[in-house]
Amino acid sequence: MANDLNVVLCIGLGISAVATESRQRQTRRERIKYLAFAALLGALASEAAYADRSGRNWISNTRVTPMLEAKGHRVIKIEADDGDWEGEAVRRGAKFDFHVDPHSGRITKLERNRD
Image 1 (tube, helix red, strand yellow):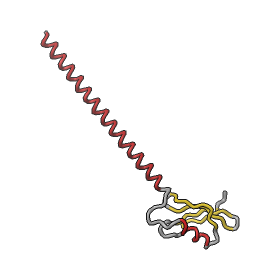
Image 2 (cartoon, one colour; image 1 turned 180 degrees about the vertical axis):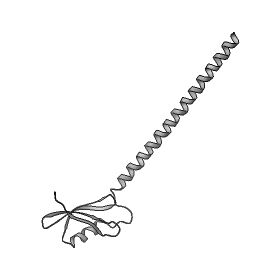
Image 3 (cartoon, one colour; image 1 turned 90 degrees about the vertical axis):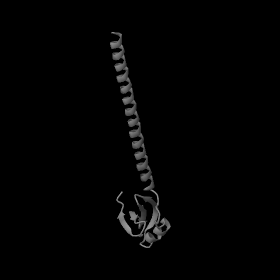
Image 4 (cartoon, helix red, strand yellow; image 1 turned 45 degrees about the vertical axis):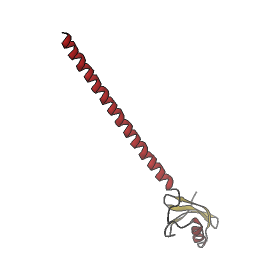
């Protein structure tokens, strides 16, 4: 009877140890998943932040301004946004929104702002 109790006790402790080890593995996996997700979010956030800065091989905003002035527009705001130079300009009292390709200098959008 004592041997049977020892066997049952050993089996019970063995199952408990296996269950504890399984929980530790699961917890470790959850931590790894959490860290991977956090790293992904960090990478996405940093990519979004860089989208609002001028990049390598961009023409400067000081070269963009004279291009628009040659068309009769006075630039009142210019910034790097979503991979383009974007801004606002005024011509004969009317406001315009513009986008300029940062590599070629080509004006890709020049629309009157209706606001």
